[in-house]
Image (cartoon, rainbow, N blue to C red):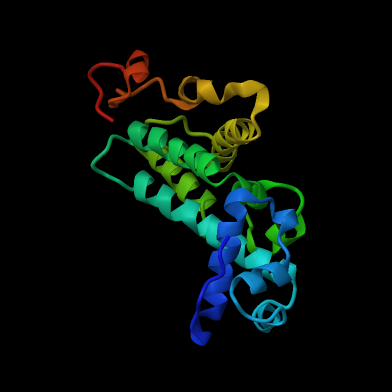
Length: 221
């Protein structure tokens, strides 16, 4: 990584950007405040004016990462030009693709090493919880429209998230070299979720080829 030139008013944002760049190729455990400050072209003590310790920087990075996933997921799941099933499908891909494109950030967000910090910024039970809330609301939309079975939306959301998170984690950690099966495994995971949670009473509208088996005639969703 090269040192950056900066304006004093931009130092904090520059330090954050450098930290995010660092995570593209390095584990968060290897991040050192002094190193990031040095990369910014400032003294090693400069970063402490903005982050008193590594935990504070990590907290900031977590908020950024969760918001990136949330905004991408929100864009897909609220796209009313697509059938709801297609939105679910693309939403899951957003989650998996974020993991593949940002493996170290993904491990930071969902791993155990900094669970104590995540608990400060992320509460899955909160109504406005980023990422999870937009997933849960889309599940509830499907339930209201009769597309999904009417059971606990929180539990369904957790199960959906668990499925995508599990696959994403296996892919970025190179488990059994399954990355070449990425699309096939994702499609089968999604199909299993449809089998578990689709209502049997409605017609499913979707452009996804393997969703055809779930389509019922005569009743519009």
